[in-house]
Image 1 (cartoon, helix red, strand yellow):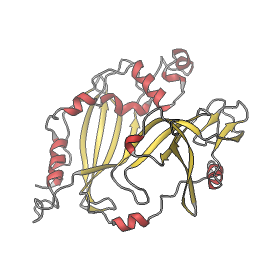
Image 2 (spheres, rainbow, N blue to C red):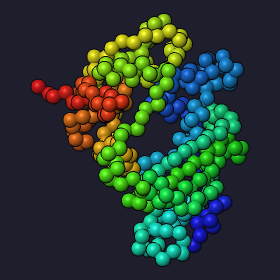
Image 3 (cartoon, rainbow, N blue to C red):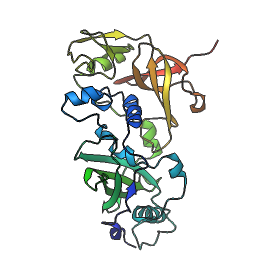
Image 4 (tube, helix red, strand yellow):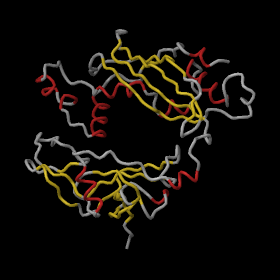
Length: 321
């Protein structure tokens, strides 16, 4: 079997379970913290020249997601499922000696996604998705493992059959345990460097001296994080900072097991902490095992001096008295 035979093959059209609707839009914008009024306010939307509210463009993929119940059942075989099965069963290029013995490309990580929006979606639209295999790379040797980059194009059409959006989706299907980085190198590696620029340098400068600061708009007084050049509420560019008390609660968390990135210890607990000041901060938990972390848990600030050039805030659970 040659993987090239899958290129150009498409799935059967997959209709959305629900039409574009206001409740799902509301859940989305609340989760994303997107305060643009054209998504929920008819008056505000009409003031922009629209006929009414619209769906956030970035929800394009969400409308055709199958949901949890559908994902637990056995999928109907199609061009993509057959390709994934072929990659999972093959440990090397098709026809090679070690295919069966070598295992397969059983692990997956998303590498990038591009979306093109051809028109705004409105309540009542019902989408259909068709996905086509665009390309499959030759075997590549990456830090995660040897594998193939698979690019598919997802085409979204409305109830009239008109294309409303296109998504190009690329994943790496790789063979676990074949990455370039050895465990020894991972232990010695430094944490990845944050992207420091003139808009957030003040925050990292404060962290180096163990101060957790929050950006504050000096025009309307609203606090914001992560740092940004402009206030999202009043659009002012004037700001200063206030120092956080370092107290908060776990708003959400995730435990990352794989793929492993050099410079971190695993399992890796990432928490979204809601600070007492009202803003939320992504950080790590120290002094607790993954099964000891829970939503709503009170936490307090500590500091991780990762290396001479990088200091980051971490949080420890508040001991119950």
